[in-house]
Amino acid sequence: MAILVSARPQPHKYMSKRFFRFMTYLAPIPNTATPISRLFPFPAMAVDVPTMRQAPRRQRRMLPAVWMRAGTSKGLFLHQRDLPPQREKWAPIILAAMGSNDSDPKQLNGVAGATSTTSKVAVIAPSERPDCDVEYTFVQVSIGSPKLDFTGNCGNICSGVGPFAVDEGLVVVPPGAEHVDVRILNTNTGRVIVETMEVDEDGHYVEDGDLTLPGTRAAGSRIDVAFEKPAGSMTGLMLPSGQPIDILHIPGTIVRPSADVTVSLVDAANPFVLVDSRSIPESIMATGADSAFFLDFIEAVRCRGAVQMGLAADLAAAGKTRGTPKIAMLSEPALTIDSGKEIPDVEVTAFSMGKVHGSLQLTGAVCLASAICTPGTIANTIAKKAEQYRAPHREK
Image 1 (cartoon, one colour):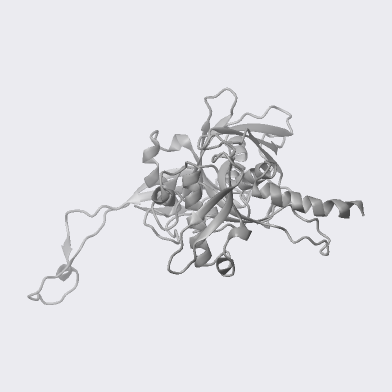
Image 2 (cartoon, helix red, strand yellow):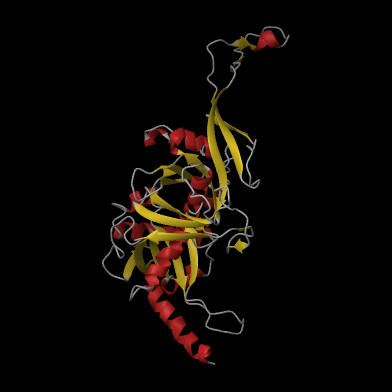
C-alpha cells in the first residue's frame, strides 16, 4: 500500500489551516504478463527472459483529514466516523497516511515529518458521556517501523482537539459567546481535559493571536488546557512504586559502566520516569544528551522504570512500548541572577521515542508540577533549593 497526497485546501475562513484528502491505493499485479521481447525488437535468445507486469489503474481511497500544528507538535486529526469501527483495523490506514507502512524512516510516502513530534494522530468523535463533548484517542506512529502506540496521551496534540471539535461542528457554540469550554475525554487514559478558547461571532475558533510558546516561533491565540484529576493516569497512583524516590540498578555493558540511578516514578497526565542527573555516571553525561551512547543509557533507565511502575512485565516488553512511560532528566538550575532572568525551579531535558525532545511535553509539565508539589521527590527537593536561593534576592 502506498499513499498519494492531494493538497487541495477546502474553502475555510482561516487560510493557515489546510484540509487534505489522503488517497491510499493498492496496486495488485495481474495474472497477465507481456514478454520483454514483445516490447523491444531483439532476437530471441536461449536464456530465460524476465517479464514485465503492467499494473492496472490504482484504486484510490479517500480519507478526509486535518493536518494541524498543536502546541509544539504537529499531527493528523481524523473523525472516528471515517475509520473502521474496529480499532484493530485502523493500522493500515493510519500507517499509510503517515508514511510508516513501508518502514521508511523518512516517512516520504506520507505526511509525517520523520520526528516524534510530527508523527502523531488524533482520532475524535462525539462523546456518549453526558459530562463530555468529545472523545479523543491519541496515536503515536512509529518512525521506521509499522507500529502504532495507543498508550498514554499527548498534551500538545490534545490542545488541537478543542479547535478541531469547534470548527468541525462537533461542539455547538452558544450565540454571542466569545469563549467556549470544550470538555474532552481522552480514551487512552480515561481522564477529562477542559480546553478554553476564543471564538468569533460565527462560532469559529479564533486562530490568530500573539501568544508564542517555547519550542515554536509561530504565534496564535491562547488555549487554556486544564487536566482534571491527572494523578494515576495509567497506574491509578501518583507514585506507582509507593515512594517518592527509587534507585534503579542499570547493569553495565562492554561500553558503559553499571549505575544505580536515582529516579522519581510519577504518574500525572502521563507516567514519567524523572531522573536525577547527579546520579548518572560522569562518563555518560560527558557524551551529551543527544549522543547514541547517552540515549542508549536513558532508554535502559526508562525500561527499568516501566517495570518498576507496573507498566511492563519485563524489560523486553518495556522496550516494545516506547511511548510510555516517558522519561525526563532533572537538574539543578544555575543559581545566579546575573542574567537578569528569574531562576527556574528545575532544569529539564525531556526525551521521546528514543531521542531528545525539542521541548518539555505538556503532559510532562503537568507531571513535573505534580512532582514538585509532592514531598520527597527529586523535583520537590530541587525546587525547594531554588526557592531558598530566590527568597532573599526578592527581598532586595
